[in-house]
Image (cartoon, rainbow, N blue to C red; front, side, top):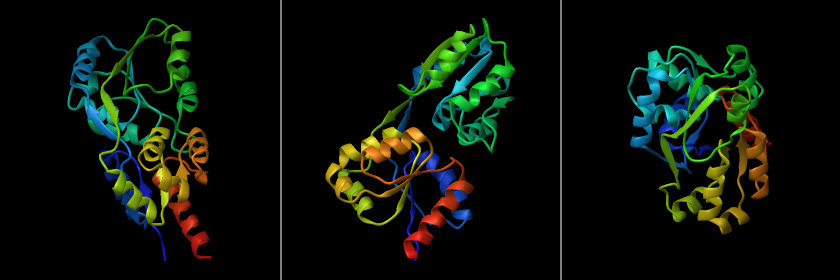
Length: 245
């Protein structure tokens, strides 16, 4: 007997993940813990700045999707940290995409920065920083330290999930392994159904050490996993084997 892998990514992003994981034999259930809404004025501002931009950083696939169709091929360099964002950029038509290699230990800013250093110098070069609200500024600071000119623009909004508290409680009641790629997603779960989460914390996979720590603060036993389908599928199979041993 197996239990499902519960995807907590926004619904639009979960579709491709579910397709790839199901092709690897994973039983998948989607439980989006973040909703995404594009910011049209932000996207318009980004496109207006496009002709004078030397490079742009995209925080997630949501940033790519929010921008929609446009002259992607005219952007000299598109940078991102995750393979899903890199794939979305290539599908959109970005000419040159820079992201941590497929075999990187982690997909994060620290693993992207050496690649950006090699692609420099960046002094006086103009960057767009396309993201939702908040986020880490570590990579922005590194680029500013070497003289890059950065313009952050919010192109989408992260919203609480559309699922009701009752739906989330029902999801927690069924055994499964939850995959988290965002600490904010876990925070939404804790806010909506704190009692159920405290009584029945699910086993979890997390794609970054900071997310592992956030999960453990909420009482979940979390395992670090690389944010790519093969690694997630293997972690799910290992967990299912332990559950049935």
